[in-house]
Length: 305
Image 1: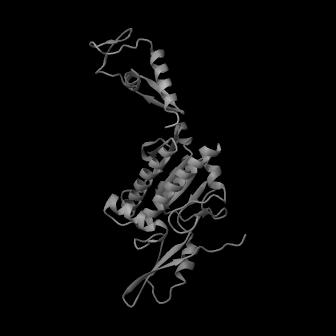
Image 2: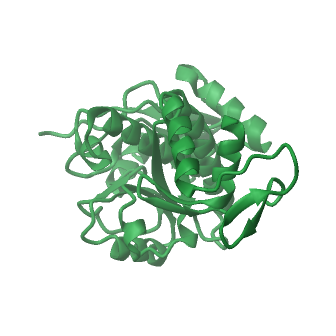
Image 3: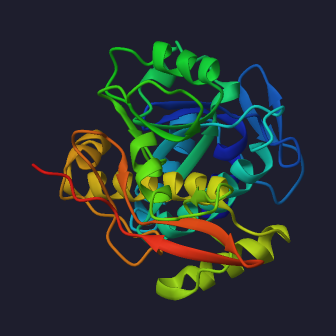
């Protein structure tokens, strides 16, 4: 009976859960509609005329499963432009991140939803209440998100925008500042083709090999810096939301805490510098000498207080 009630509610009601409104259609298989309510379509079906009774049954079912799923957390994701050469890698990183974060959240009784922001009216009241946004793309695309969220409490995590301006007060960036990249390159001599990376497929320590394996199995491709930055942005956003919920705080407050640390398989707790608002992390320099490619880890710079 409880199952029938749940099926009925899932097909006839318009409900609001945690501020989100859902329109649900009637169950054509079990019931038929008339002007007075619902009547049985055939024998052995259950008729629930008063809508209040159905809602009451739903409430009982929800209460019984409260420990299994107590809340819904929503994070908006703005994906890279399809014309961007980095788009496939960024999209894979976002996909793996959202899949893993959703599974982790369920362990804590939380339903975590990642909404594709391209389908949202970013100036709507509902969109402006989403606490964390993950963005990637060209400067104009990212600037539109910033403008739409101006004056809100939302935190933006930049997973690969091409803008060169310093991060805004409500923005955090995964990629290093240009100065940090230049400093990392200065450690290599005689290789003009050397480049700074956030990630490499050869990394093995601290669970890096496991992350590379998961990515490879999921996409039949190798995780690169763009994919890692997108994955890390989602992981950090999800962890911040879960910590905020546990503490009764906002994700923005958690992310603004200079002591908040996140693990992303780089061998050290990663934090956002409160001044630069960028992720403090090891970098990797790829260089070639005598025909052999080497990957050298560069520890994060120590900034004076």
